[in-house]
Image (cartoon, rainbow, N blue to C red; front, side, top):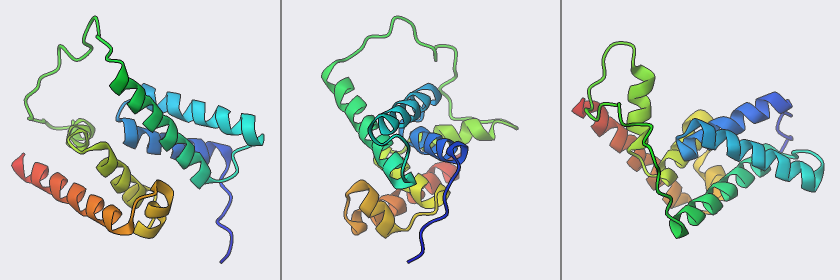
Length: 156
C-alpha cells in the first residue's frame, strides 16, 4: 500500500482545526485543542508525524477536557448567549448558523463520526481504527446522525 501524500503544516493545522471544531462545536476550544496537540507532539517527536496521530492526540485531549468538566462544574458569571433567540427559525443568509444549530443537536461522538466520514473522507474501517470503536458502531453513528439531521431539516 503506497504511503499517503504528505500534508504541509498549514494543511495539517487546518484539517486538525476542522476536526477539533467538529468535536467541540466551539471556535476557541477547537483552537486550544489544536495548539495543545501540536505542541505536545512537537515536544515528544520534534514534529507531527502523521495526520492520524495528530487527530488521535486532539481526540484524547478533548476526552480529557470533557472528563475534567464532568468532575468540576464551572458556573458562568455571564452568559454570552443571552441575546440570542432560542427559536429554531432561520432567515435568508443564515445558512452557517442553521447548520451549526443542527450539528449542535448531535451527540459529540455522532458529530465526530460524521465529520471524519463526510469532511475528511475516512471509511468506516479507518474511523473505527482511529477512535477504537467497532466498525458496526461507527456505521450506526454515521447513519443515526444523518437521520437526525434529515429529521431536523424536515422539521424546519
